[in-house]
Image (cartoon, rainbow, N blue to C red; front, top):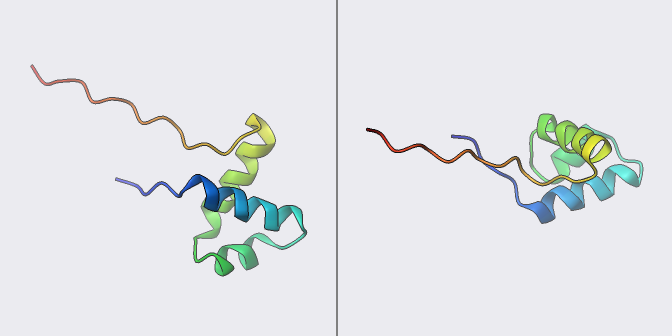
Amino acid sequence: MGYTHPQDLRLRVLAWLRAGDQVEVVAQQYNVDPRPVERWRERQREEGHVLPHAIPEASPET
């Protein structure tokens, strides 16, 4: 299962990007992979937030 980065980290990273830093520099500064940073920036642009996607509830086995 994947790891969900905290909301405050996402917001700090995006603030650095808005200040003009490059994705790779910011990702390295916060020790995260650049791919989620790109996704956060895209989600912020498209959806207006960077909240993690809801995890579907597991259905009980019958």
